Length: 249
Image (cartoon, rainbow, N blue to C red; front, side):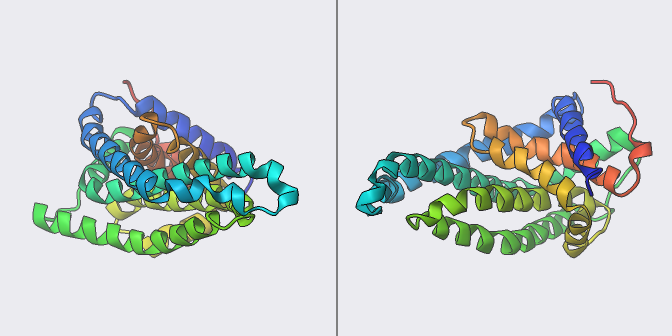
């Protein structure tokens, strides 16, 4: 498993290098706009509904721990924005799934010269894509909801920080590694099986994504980076890394 760690880093670096390739560029713009719109709406809503609750978490501490109130409040805000970033990415990914699926397909074609066209009509393609995204949301949203609840409990919020990072990394990796798997006719359960066989590599791939979604504006690029880098990593984990050729920008 340890050998998977550098593979994840290499996949992310390779994906970043391909991010603005001339053949991929136009497939990134629509998801980018959707991510910004969804994230902005979630942040505005969360500040209106949860701002006072998060700001008052420090007052719930015992008197002897009052000095930690500022740290707890800062951590709570960071957790809130991390969770909002992950949720925005998951929701915008569902809306932008046809673009991401095409992006994964185009990336694989650039890397291997192969063609993973499904052969389905446009309507069938869209229906199958959205059905797959709903399956992934059913897998990820309950886990995200549990973490969100834990993060609002005084004291347990400290425990929620590493759990949010690790589970967020796992969920995002599963969401975005699956596009190439789906294009190859693999079920989502098989994507999860691939992830379990390469846990450390998958977490090493997902942690930078989970951290990246907390960054204003730049976090909107995480989805596209995850799709392109995920295609590289899936090819590598499937033992097809020898097929991945250098690509001119």
